[in-house]
Image (cartoon, helix red, strand yellow):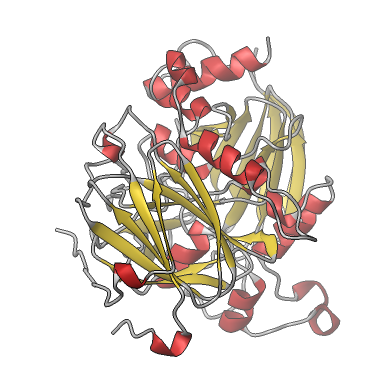
Length: 237
Length: 229
């Protein structure tokens, strides 16, 4: 079975988007202009107490960055999504979400009353509100990923934001291994040193894709992932 | 070579208000009042102490690893680290630390993640999430406060655990940098609930393959008497 395009969408900068990404489909996120940041969070839509677990994701794959071949683990030892394509090479799992205080401190306060849809928004509030639409609450929001952004860590543990990590047209593709509630926010990365609030847009496309085969690169990335796929497939028996 | 900072405390154990021994594989949940000092002692060395903190008056306002490391610009916790909550509050400050470096990205072991990391057959081995679930389920909340559940268990601190990251984006679990008698001390900046799982993991070197007891000490110190310098 070949990949079949099902839908496309555009998300402006500073916005929040969500979708129940069905098992057997994949979401491609494209950084149209370069320099986008997409904060992302994932839950099992059929069992929302099962959600993205960042430490399990990092330690199972012995990585402090995310790219093609990696998968996103839930807290139940199962795989929510696999990263099946990536032209960027490094997505940030460390720095977390912008919040109202941080955005105001960096860029000043700009209200909706004053600026209409150009107002200054932040990722934590955006994702919290979006979770509320599914009957969930801010307490359901745990550690997140920042797609298209890079924060490196030196030998003393100091964190360094790396500008120009993502070129125009770069993309990352997430294949759903279960029915996944995906929440995205396009506010600036919390460590982006740019002095102006200028969040970048992304485009989205959803494809129907083949089920992962026995030689799938995410499955064979490491023995941990082979077991992760086994446990995820067991969940559907 | 990474820099390790050590900061000793002037507090005397015999002056502590309370002292507890937490055996490996056990949970420990306790309210720490604003201004009180909490010390966790790695009695026998190389013991990972998985730890969570909550605002005692709003459990959804809880320790946030990502906010804590981002705001200090460093992924390791040590003296001076302010433990931030999801709502941006300072829950506690680390005021002394003779180990010098603690992890907050290694998370807690769970039966389910042990199956992924080691072998499907490891399902029934004891794990930190079992202890967190037990300790938090058995915690009797104050009137007006709800009970804890699994959704409250978030990315935790691993006191005394060494999970270095490399500039290339690698991550490894290494032998501890701690040893017998090392401790970390924290001042509560608000009323908090402390939840510990003294890690029972036998499958990796985070406990040197030998999980051991730790000591928890609590001092009732007026804020003006605390001088960490």
